[in-house]
Image (cartoon, rainbow, N blue to C red; front, side, top):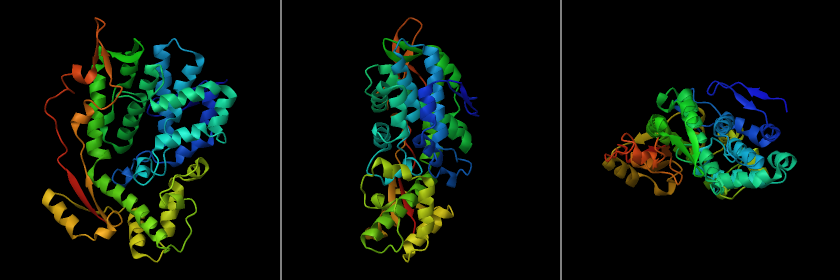
Amino acid sequence: MKTRYIADSILDGITINDELINALYESKELKRLARINHLGIVHFIYPMAKHYRFEHSLGVYELTRRTLKKLNPDVSKTTYRAVLAAGLLHDLGHGPYSHLFELISVKHHEDYSIDIIKNSKTDVYKAFEKFEPDARKQVIQILKGTHPVKWCNQLISSEVDMDRIDYLLRDSTSTGAAYGQIDWRWLIKNARIHNGELVFKEKALTVIESLILGRYHMNIAVYWNPKNVANQILYKSWFERMSFLKKQGKLKSKYRFLEKIFDREPMSVEEFLIVDDSILNSAIRYSMYEEDEIIKHIADMFLRQKMPKTIFGKEEVAFFEKSQDQKLKKQTWDVVDIATDFSSYQKNHKFPSKILTNDGKVFIATEYSSVINSNAVHKNRIKKLGVKIY
């Protein structure tokens, strides 16, 4: 096929020169991700953080493509294509505002991703059928982390994988929090396959340290920032209140595409693919015209990006929790544990990053490094956070 080039400011361009990947790129299921904000509602506190799952998926594919080109693995064309496709499709199952959807969904995004790939009515399924039917099964194995070739799993999901590299680069760029800026080119240059697993030469250790520390700092400053956590509760509270009102028969408007979510029921692939940020935003705007004052207040706060009241301190949060109407917990208030802990970034994946030394020995990076293997464990100074919405 004719090579497709896509401009990208993060990776200096994305190249597609495979018919299967091109067909997957054109699929309506992948293009839907252009309507799913990658960082949820982080833009409430970082206004420029408005990139989408679509470009992240392309970025993971491109990093995977470049790494495979460097590794030049001795595998079949089917397996090679499956790894590329897994990088592109790994986030197909994200709902409105990405990870926030999992606060109220009965299924994880990984499960929806696999459902979409297996569904014979989707463009994704048809692309595999046309160009490489046997790759579909391998893609599912990779997304589950069960592919028999270990490095295939590691490239897409491990302690140091193409997914984490890309989202750290994009998230840090869009938010302006520069913790996630790493020398990804040097990491790829020093990637190797050793005894069937992905390893990195010792000279790349500094990049691995930067990635793990950067991910930890991004969690503190961005993902688990107390303000962002409070705003996430605002998102969750809208669904909780709408679910309550629906059960009470007090919704005057119809919310056709969201009713199964309100009822805590899994959606079919067809139903799920309809739902994106635009559908949810429209529903929130409609809810402004409900008779219930609480849902109108929550919707107004969300649309105006108004942060809920936050309560800090062990005694203060305990008093706050006791003084609230327990029947309205999760609807108008909540208490959240914030437990970001550096120890979880030292040993946190079934596929830990590995270092290959000059004498051929292999070590787990977090045990080999003197920077990311510290006995001093820093725990987030905030243990619990009270969030008051109404």
